Length: 201
Image (cartoon, rainbow, N blue to C red; front, side, top):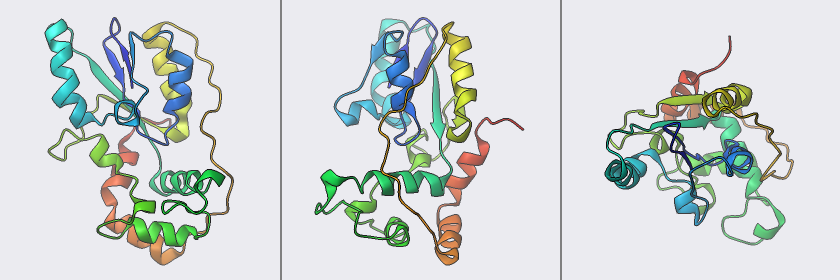
């Protein structure tokens, strides 16, 4: 998470949406950088509102900070997690996915409760106000990252060059039509959230 105090903007880091690259490019420009532990780097909106927003209000109650995030197409987002958890250092770990198919991973995500390997959170929960309502000020699609970069470049008055970070291993990820339909029904809110984000066209 990055805080741009003068520009009244907070960049929330929903995992697997390119925010590590943005943080690497802008860490020297930010007033505050939350990068470790992961619970601080990836603070969801409802925890930001509960714990950090009141603190910032104590510092300057008149400085209303807007929030910003990126969101990824749900199947692609799950695919990124699947590939990330197939990296060599997780071979043999209960959360490793190198020995399972993408169908198995998505099926696990649809279970309640989710098994550890598929317990990767929820973009709708991450970006909600705690009452199930999306409340982030500026939301962009990961697939059109250039729009988020243009927004930040204009807002911060800087030129932004991104490098690749946290690149996951390449894997084939066929998903059966039945599981795709189940995902679209059971996680309809995730697809609606992605559709609601800023994009060209």
